[in-house]
Amino acid sequence: MFYQSHEFENGIRLVHHRFPSPVGHCGLTVNAGSRDESDDEHGLAHLIEHAIFKGTKKRRAHHIINRMETVGGEINAFTTKEQTCIYSSFLKEDFKRSVELICDIVFHSTFPEKEIALEKEVIIDEINSYKDDPAELIFDEFEEAVYKSNPIGRGILGTPECVRKFRREDLENFIRKNYSTNQMVFSVVVDMDFKRGVKIAGRHLEGIPASVSEKKRTPFTNYSPGHKRVAKNTHQAHCMTGNIAPALDDSRRFPMALLNNITGGPGMNSRLNIALREKKGYAYNVESQYTAYTDTGIFGAYFGTDRENLEKCTETVINEFNRLRKKKLGTIQLSNAKRQLTGQLIMSFENKEHLMQTMGKNYLLFNRLYSSDQIFSIIDKITSDDLIELANDIFEPQKLTSLSYF
Image 1 (tube, rainbow, N blue to C red):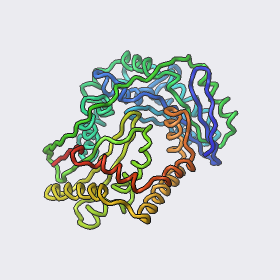
Image 2: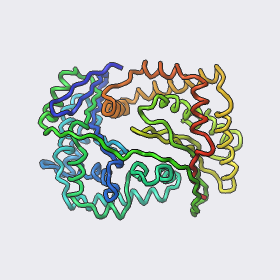
Image 3: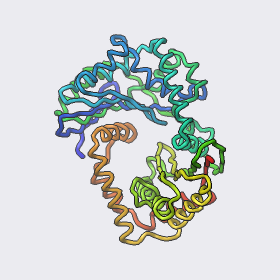
Image 4: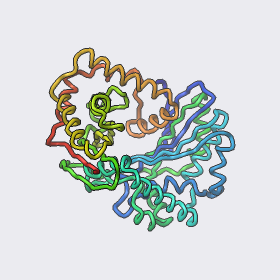
């Protein structure tokens, strides 16, 4: 993938990929997420993501909503453990409109107290809806079980108690501490000349006062596995089993992505799906996930099943882990697994909104982007020895953490 980049004097970076399409995408990615909250700020990063849409120095909330909607575009945002992204999709002739709106809500929000109070209730309802869905809740609580007291283990949404007490000053203080210009990347995928794109974006980004900060996050150390069972008044039992995994800058990240894909990835031919669903009919929802953070990562295998099958499913998952620990993939198996992963990546690159977001995150963290050819070359070099060595680390029984709802 060909891309071009530019850094403004205030430290904000812009990365641009030209793609022939009537639709464009752009977004501002900030190196600030729920992990950057103090104990009494739990949920604040996510509240800010909501609150920036509620009014600026020149727009009210309904003006912000209508600005892109009236021309067929969209504006949205999301918060992760380590980043916040405000992004827009638009017809390419509305690129100026999109850039101006993103910059207005990020840099000129006024956080009206009345609007914040309403949005708190929306978020509390969102938190409560998660509690009603154990298949979603277990992912957050599994991360809490793995990371324990480290800020990275806390849920992104926060708690109703924390959210209710936040004031405008809390939002402004968090932004002042974490929204530094050297921790921002504006990513663009649009059918437009790079120089013109820089000029348009520069009208709104160049005037932002420079601010510099270094990320000093509390590192995660001293992982200790544990096993927890929670009684729930639900028809199904739910279970997650996993371990810490390679971080973003770890050379084993791509082998881990391949191992996850083989174990319980999105394909119906994953080991866990075949074992639990196709062969035994124990479970409808079966998957595994691997998430890499800047200094750590996490792997977890999930299934939902009838209560009477919980122990059988758990045993089956451990058996599949052990198969991957003890038996190397054959030449054809390895080749097929690599081909499946690269095919999935190629198809994901077709989603240009997702590509824009990936560009922002990767350029923010590494100041560079991998080309698709580079990624495929790395995957192609993965060996069966690499995978079995990694499997023996990640799937070591004594290292596993488990969480069950029954």
